[in-house]
Amino acid sequence: MSKSQLEKQVMKVVKSYACRFVPQSKSRNAGNALTLNFICTIAGLDVEYSAGAGHCANQTNKQATLRECEGEPSAFDAPRTYEPSVMDVAHSLRLDACVLDHDDFAGWAQEYGYNSDSIADQKVYQACRSQAEAFRSIIGQAGLDALHQLLDQY
Image (tube, rainbow, N blue to C red; front, side, top):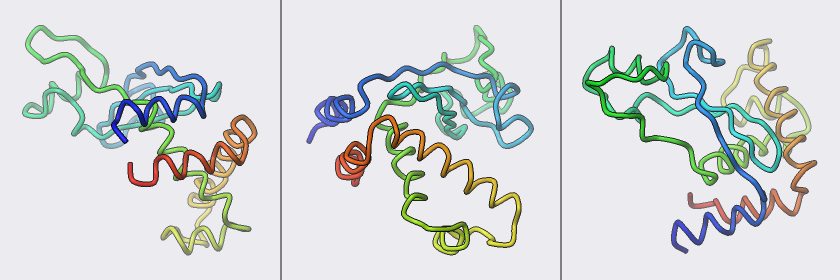
């Protein structure tokens, strides 16, 4: 299946998609490694999406990369060209929804390499579970299954 055909199939499942850029300093990643950050609305659900600085247009100059991650324009830098596709975000949500396959935090932590004694890791689990349940409530289990099949090799 071509990329455009795949995108059409994913859009049939999620119905709607849009995203907007969020400066690094205003994102959940503020103070961490440089990332391009977005709030994406997929199937009516707002989700945070981040992509590594490797997606920046100018990777040869750290200051230019920093400006791009902050969304600052510069006459000397290439414009930001990366924006996550509906397939990128749907794939990320599909992977996160695997949390629903686990009955508890300990099982999930063991499978995904998290520490079952960590409060911080338990917060990650709870955030994934909450988002996955919200996404499933919108697109249904059949929608999650369809995304799993469509995006299995993405």
